[in-house]
Image (cartoon, rainbow, N blue to C red; front, side, top):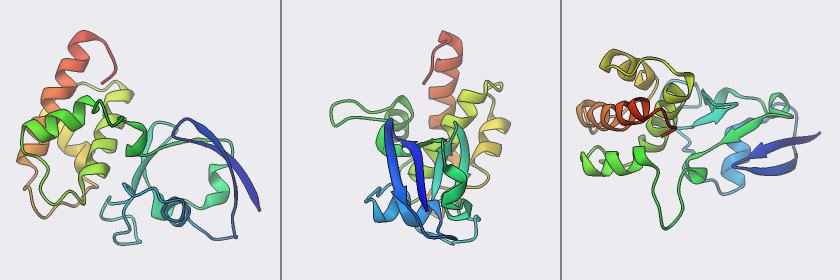
Length: 158
């Protein structure tokens, strides 16, 4: 079946077998920020933004993305300029092994876009679906608060 959707700002037409997942497609398209973790939607390693909402790509069947907008971490920065969340993750030392980092950043971006109040409990809730075995979440939460509180106080997108 042929599916058409927007991926990182580009219109994509993809052929997909019934039952194939968005994770399978993205990995075959060499989108490396989307990791293959648990295959059950429990670890957050495959997090993407689907119409600006944080979702696990391993749980999304390809036929359901027809006409929709998908963003991965690849769309968040250039080789010259990092996204503000990426900058603060680096500044705060929130990046350890890096396996969970793309999913965390996308989950936090989804929180910022939904316009919720930026406070520690909301940040922790947003990160709830992202399993991290290295950081203990202290530094990612601190980095997120630094970025998102700046963003909400200036009224701009992060």
